[in-house]
Length: 276
Image (cartoon, rainbow, N blue to C red):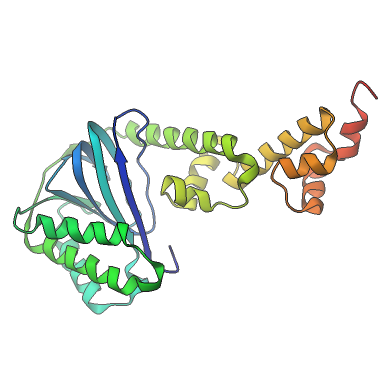
């Protein structure tokens, strides 16, 4: 995202079961619209009712999340970093909308019926026709959305949200990420899955892991891979096969990590087997 300055999310859920968009933050602004269903949205310390004809505008580094209440549920979200675009017109539109927000974390805005289809059309084009080779066009759409939100909306009032929601949201995200890691351990070679699957920044998820588990996401993944390799070797698999099945592509990296983690070599584990 730092390269193109643009990240998009489009989700459709048939039921409320399993829906996950807990409270989080990222180093980008966000525009979010709901096209089906109803939900609550938390922005900063305020909770709003959020549904059709509403649009959320969220400042960078501000905590936010959705609380789904009615399905089927569909939403589009666009996260963007203005400095990457380097557009005076975009900066002006952003400043204009930001100056109207009573809540300095962001706002939920009810869009006039006459311009709501335009906002939805622009959001769909950005999310569904997205190509990193022509981001300038998509920033043009963002500028058009900001223009309409600045001139043809009414701000909704909200209520102070329970800060426990932030903690619960972090726990839900932690559980979701660790479950994903457990199910896809041998296929994970970097942290790109965090944004691709969960749509949160690496730094945000790393912060949750360090605060809760005392390790980074990658340290957690490496430890899980090494535990798997240890068990495979103990069960009789060859050391190289265990390394490969645990997701290590470089044997020398695997060997050094194994010795550092367990204090013994892989061959020592093999020699410990009862049948030997």
